[in-house]
Amino acid sequence: MAQRLNGLFAVHKPVGITSASVSNGIKEIIRQGLKSCHDGRDQETEKLEGGHRQRGKLRIGHGGTLDYAASGVLVIGVGKGTKALRSFLKGQKKYMATGQLGIATDTHGSSGKITQVSSYDHITEEKFFEALNRFQGQIEQVPPVYSALKVNGERMSTLAYMGVDVQPKPARPVTVYGLKCVSFEPPSFVLEIVCGGGFYVRKLIHDLGKEVDCCATMTALERTQQGPFHLGHNVLRSNEWTFERILEVLEDISQPYYRP
Image (cartoon, rainbow, N blue to C red; front, side, top):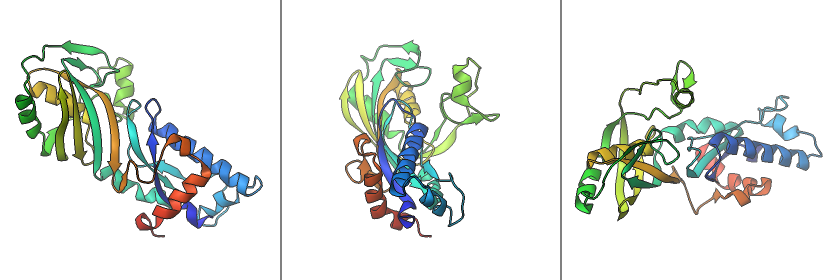
């Protein structure tokens, strides 16, 4: 059992819950499963720490935060598998994002306060697609103020929600491996994005709105792939978050990504 509880698997994070809450919930499911298997004695939790008696040290983490309002693939590391999560923070990701022309918000998402409203009648499909081409490859992107990046140890988003005047971080290089529009029905549009680490889809949509002499905000986001994990293949939906299913999936995929 202990050997099987070192590795990686992926879940589908629903909209309306934080990535940290998902990780904590999975941790509790595993902890309760271990106790049930061993008559309430947390023996396996001790073994997960290399055989030392460190009760309560079950390690669980996730590789790449999804916004509260976003859904999709969230990679979970268990035990020694948490050491492999860093590569997922920097690795390639794929998203399906829905945007709306004619509205801008302070968070660049639909839950934010509207800061601008403008006409989008002048935006043709040709102009929109031409603008998309300018966001391909390695580009410079200014991270949104409403983000998990920190200023003096505090999250920028926390300070912004408190009313603090938070200045944006400097632009930084990010990589867009693939970007295409799969639906264009103004004011709505849907993008498929393949990008590297540190990329903000909300900011892409915001900047895209400016590029077509308008404004835009993101209304929905789903991460469909992160590294080798993609929807429809060993990604557990919320109704499958059970100790038994986690063991099944973890046993299948832990070895290729972490070797003790």
